[in-house]
Amino acid sequence: MNCSSLLCRALASLLLGSAACGSPKAPERDPEVLLAQDFEALNGWAGVLADDSPGATLSVAVAHSGRCAARVGGTAEYGLGFAAPFRLLTKKRPKSLEISYWCYRTDTTGNAATMVCTIVRPSTKQQLYWKGADLQKEIREDHTWTKITQRIDIPAEVDFSDTFRLYAWRGAAGSDVFFDDLQVRQLPD
Image (cartoon, rainbow, N blue to C red; front, side, top):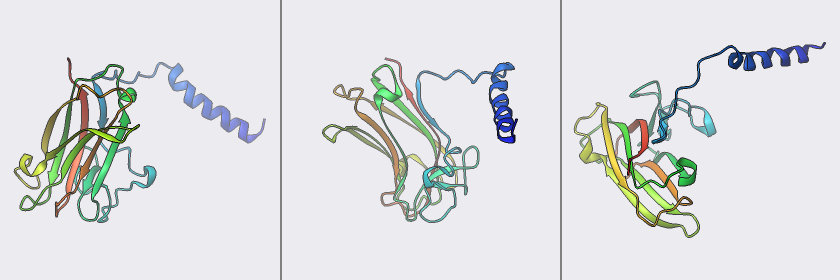
């Protein structure tokens, strides 16, 4: 038996062994939670680095939980974003969503960034919905994490092929704004 086949067997036993030995199951996922992101696992993916340069969209300067938070400000006009058709998020067409996240501003004297939610019909590029949370009004203190919660009522014409998008936009903000522990929940009918 050569070395590479021994290595393959060892790797297979490690991968399969944990399932066969009764390792704990992953926690049950709440079916109402369509998206949960703490930004930890994104560091290093697709060129996303938490290096705190002026254009970085991921930062280790401050975080609500863990080490990383999403960032807009400096030369980063748009923060990390999420986009997916509703059919990939849920089995039931939502009537309302609740978007919650923690937000941190480094300076409350100027303008703040905006958390934007849109719904777009890909076939026509028609924007069916747009809502921006004005963080200037939501955050009262600088250098303090504030929980923001938004309710989104989905227009009746939205269907499963339409794309739900969520992203932070710097807008006229002059200072850094950080986002962490984002969650999108489907509200009961």
